[in-house]
Length: 466
View (cartoon, rainbow, N blue to C red):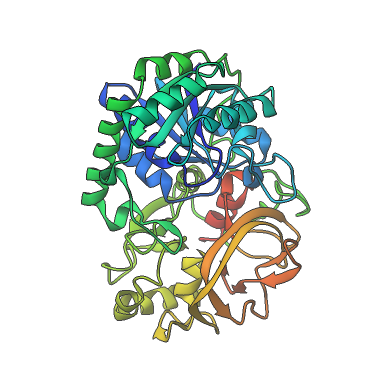
């Protein structure tokens, strides 16, 4: 059993990330092994969680991975830890659009049998806070709100009024935090600026968050609440167990582990290069674990700095990030762009999601990119955001034709055309459309997927490395 807490809020912007990250760092500073988790598909917050704890930040997404995998993935990440802190997403009861509680923080809390701490932005209220907390605590009897942390409290008098109002609510106040500019993290068009782009400042911000939490929160009370979570009887998820995937006919999310492009000799471990650095910060820890379990040697490289792919690269994974911010630098690295294009031309498998899609395009905001796709990308004022149900239109290194997956889109760019002659996916929501590109061994799409939710994906990709 792992002691555990879910940090939630009535809405976005209340301070969940600040409180959750501060708690992680404060408890880690006391010598506890803290496992960090994030509800939903967010890639950026887990980077701050990792900085606070020294462990990989992991996502718990009931939409992309299925409700049945939430607890096993949690147990996998929290193995051997003293405490797990789970940061929620949006408001406590907000989930996938038009699908009830699916993928909400409340649903994840119930699946983990974890108590919830509600972070309330108290900056514009006093006695009304009691009605707010009462409503959230009574909405779903299966969600146990074990305490409240009041954020952005102005003065001692303000704190007194808030505590007095909550005195009869039955929900204890476990923390009061004043406004503190030092703990704030800068944002831009897709949320917080990732750790990889501001590491020194991020270290300072996390330290400030930990100090604020230590000064304003009842750490002993919070730890006692976490330890009150009942036993969670679940077998931890294992990347090795998913190695071969689940064979099938390509009609479900657990299908698509087709055979190899070519056979590999015994003992050979193909090198899979994974893009990283400041421009490509979006990745799930489980992807690397799955690739390694499938027999690959995973080597990271930085397209902003490295002029060649890792030696012996047989497959390439380029995840999400911010190529639009680093367009000039990526374009200037012509040797690497040429190396990526040559690898794609050889037929080697290349998996590109969102930022990777833009990097493989002919141009981004008028600057030359890798030129693998006959498409041009540019920044847009329109935010594209939401979960997606998708089906593979044809065979690719990631999926067999007809395989169904669930994913997520999150970008402020557009690519024209939006789909190639061989599209990557057929999407079903919020509207039906074809999306992405399959060309040779290249699979490029705006849709982010979580490979733990589609067993066989990593194994299929590694087999295609030849």
